[in-house]
Length: 222
Ligand code: DC
Image 1 (cartoon, rainbow, N blue to C red):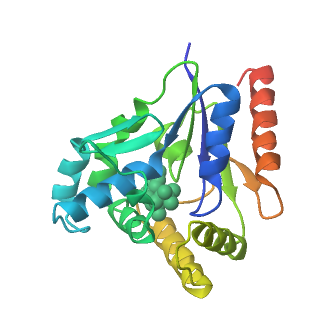
Image 2 (tube, helix red, strand yellow):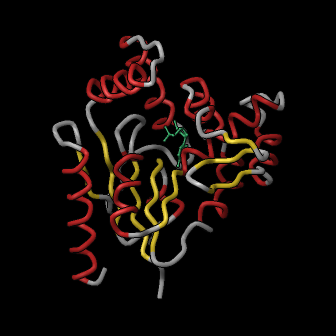
């Protein structure tokens, strides 16, 4: 029997990570935040003087990336990198390294290895289209750009970081454009993905919606 997978793809700051992690918790499934792999690679490159455009060097680094997910943290070369990978600058780097086809290829199997019983919930940009095309349930989770910028702004203020709303908005627009325009695995809603617009929804409402859809899939048998 194949292991169930729920894929949640969507743009940055849409809340897909929070929703995916909570769905995984409610179902007792494993969780893969695929963006963290791209962020880890960008951070690794920065620390080792590898340019974010050096495709061959980056692909090699991606294939051998010394990372471990344990104790609720992400470890890069033995050090807790959970905070560092969340920096806005590293998010931009992740989007740049993620545009390179060789890098995506090198990370493919690594992501598929997370598919373990009893099931997996994963979030990213190409989880349903490329990494898990046979997923049980595929969702495209989004929210308006205004709403996403305001959520990211609140999040940064909450962490005590300085935040400038117009700049965040511009970063979100630029990142969406880069993620959607790249020739490999672009950000877009696939025809077999269900649209979940969270602009007007709370996190709990979004989580419940995913759980209901998953239940329906289980009942209907596909
Ligand atoms: O989901 P996130 O914001 O942590 O992702 C950071 C960047 O990584 C995103 O702008 C594009 C890239 N990414 C990707 O190309 N493919 C994925 N499956 C996940 C993230």
